[in-house]
Amino acid sequence: MNLEQFIDHCHRLTGNQQQETSGPDSLIGLFQCFRPDGKETQEIFLNDPRKNDLTQRLEQLYVVAGNDRRPDGVRDAYFVVRRPAPISPMQAETIGKKWIQGLHSMAEHAGLETVLESLGAEITVRVLEGIPPKHPKNKSEHSTFLRSIHRCGEITDQIQVNSIATALRPAYYFIACDPMLRDYLMWPFYREETNLADPLGPYFHLWKCGVKYRIFEETQIDLYLPRQPAT
Image (cartoon, rainbow, N blue to C red; front, side, top):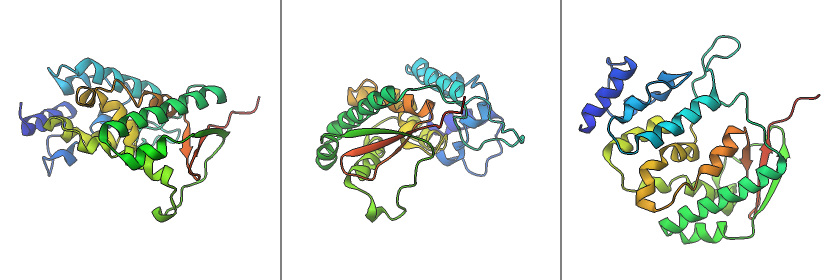
């Protein structure tokens, strides 16, 4: 199946055959079409040998995000974790450190010396609770550490994969406009090329628990846990 046939196949699965364009951007919103339970997503990958792994990751996504209907009846445009899994501050700190280690392994594979230097420092993981502040809009005000994290979100752009995987990247990205989540869900496409098993597994764990990260210092990452309801 060539790329054009694959895109047409995806449109048939979702019933969206009247598309103005037929390129990869026409697949944006693909995974939203299978909400809330994600049934039939395995049909996207047909006979791809990574089908089971890719489908299992998507199944996790649908379970975590749940129903896309808000209380007012409006549908979420993206996958949002409204009922995060519980996580303790100690667990968040441990998983956060594992995430940084996974990013380090990705940067090592890509030969990003500046990123390796930043991620290889003695990083402090601080766990907080509540709504996190925003990073500065002006990128010139971002710390080197934050820029290194963002650079890790671009690493898979350079990994050689088949044309179908490349075509799916926009659809995966617009699941939540999160490159780390995209790359976790797509990692079966990159595993063989990198020899890295699952460097972003810890990030997905944080994401499903509703944890947000913020970086304002060079050697410290703040993880914000959802505020627990009063008992």
